[in-house]
Length: 337
Image 1 (cartoon, one colour):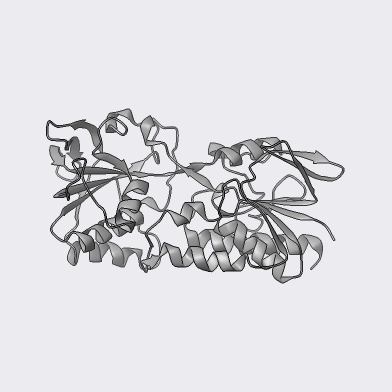
Image 2: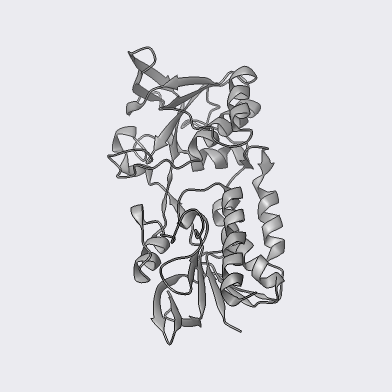
């Protein structure tokens, strides 16, 4: 029996491991952090049904309770190379792991908002990212820089996505619905807060997403402004003043807010870039490149290397779970099952 290794214990990697293990195949699952599902564990609720993220983490964790899945936690795979018809994986401790088949499920990294200096992240304490807002919502501690309940919160879309200055021309797919979700969650916790969402155009592409958008306006009073924020600056009382343009009205706009939430997009992780380059499957923007996006999206040009999840492109959680299953089926096809 050929040996199989999966790099990354997010929802895609866990789902792929689960499907293979159910067929009696031993799978080695490598995760660079001390626990699986790190990118999901930090979330509060998931769209479109506001399911607690902890429920998903627990459900995926139970799937790992399988004797055919060998977990290698806190093991960062830093190199991959061809050897004797298979693949040699090297970790950060200098140890080597030999395998016949590799599934890359190395995920994504959030865009570093420090790169958008004009928005003041890291300069003004009232400027936070969507990940930080998610934690505030999860622990029901939405506060401004003074430790007070905010009276106004502004969400800004497309930070690090669809942006020539940052070098990312692509859409990160989930930011629009995440801002709407977070605005609803915010209004549920703080009904009196004024919530604004600044956007270029809203891409509510998924099932029930348009309904969330309508509900945010009709039931929760979230206000939407079509326009980009060009600059953010601090005020004497610890708030944030933003300069923008309302592109529907064609008018400049100044607004003071307690919190400016930057909806950061997805970028290829350093692991994806490094391993993808090493085995010749590094594609546009550093994401892993599959053979064909339609019929062979889990296969790569490197023999014995498969890809799944957000290491290929921005995806939602249900996308990556389904793609993990698809990658497992591709491997089973390769093995003749």
